[in-house]
Image (cartoon, rainbow, N blue to C red; front, side):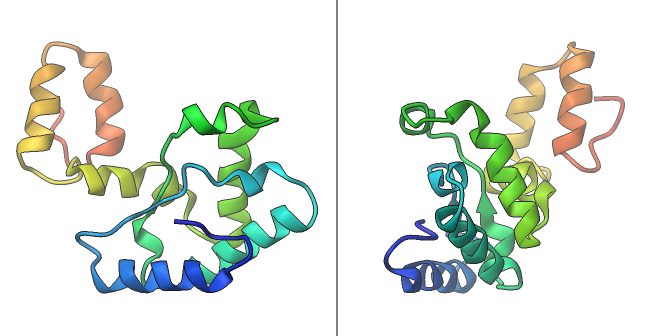
Length: 143
């Protein structure tokens, strides 16, 4: 989903599609390189995010990792930090953007096969299971 650039109507249209189909459509902001810029490009990126902050699509915006593309950009080492900063500046919930939306997208936030497979893979690894509790609300401590 492109949030800024020459056609600001496009992000609105994407947000409307996400809002109409929240179980099927997600907005991945993985190549959101405008956050690396200073000045008007960065401000435009924050404004685009801000326009989505109160939109019903906001819970379905997530951070992806297109490092193949982002890694080619100047300043790529600060990309994740600047993207999270732009999200916070725009008033979107950082935790949702950083991991909660991805956990919902992957089915890790609720009982089911995806969660069961991940837990089975990490059985007997208390450190991994402790980390997974951050992403899996309600995960019993006996798992």
